[in-house]
Image (cartoon, rainbow, N blue to C red; front, side):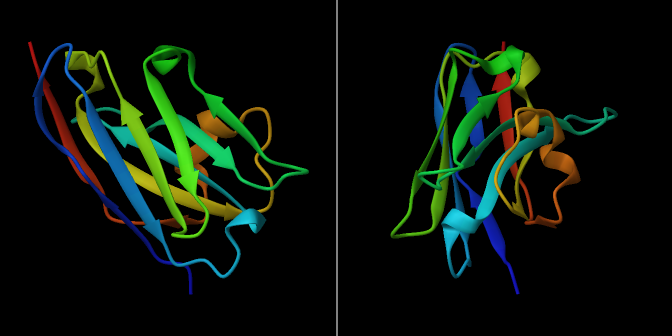
Length: 129
């Protein structure tokens, strides 16, 4: 059974930084696409970023709104995926979830993270102005 646990959320001022962690119980992280999506109150979930760690089929993808500000990375040994968020804006506020799908990420992976099969409980990120 795939289990995902997100952590690291908090309250930060605009312009600040946070790093989220997603601990994944995966037998082989290379077999999965793992990503982050967020949901603000009253809004639809929005994909943020995803990563595939396979040397052959892996990749990193971001939605336009976070490019240059967010960085996704993975610690393969720890089967943990991180989302480093900098230059945070109030519109980045929401509950952030990590999710995973078996198979390599595709070019539109970042926009579809919220449709991935496996997801964990979210962590709240609040950016004050």
